[in-house]
Image: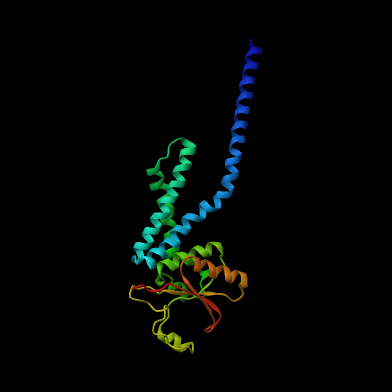
Length: 234
């Protein structure tokens, strides 16, 4: 009897192992597809947030924070779909409300809060520049902060200016400079360091901001830099 029971347990064990192997073989094609789609899935919510904010602000004329909230809602919705599909796959239940409230929303809020409020010392030319960071238009802050995740050596060299700053630098005074604070209370331009970064890196930086809907201009002024701006719509 003991020998028969042992044989039965061994057969059951082999069947379980065979079932797991079969299941893993079935998951391999999905895993391959996942490896291909994962980068797109990660990047897409960020694109929706950044490009959506500039689109709503520039093309549809939404107010600054309304545009960010709308774009953030789009990113939140996309993340909720991702999390619900994953929950459905793992547990059999989508749990949409739960994942939206406790996963997607905290991710979007934390990401935006960090991008809007924090500029590292290593990414600012001076403490004065760092101090002006929150005066920069929020959509520019979101875009610049996101790029710093990709390139942590990006340095902000200038944000806010006054007419006296142009005089001190020996430059003509521009009455409509986007480095001034505008009626909405924000500066609409930021200068980024280009010296020592290499032609390819500088080109990629410029294309990134252009793709998001910002204007870019490579000019020298007092020093070679990339000028990134957002038109003031009101």
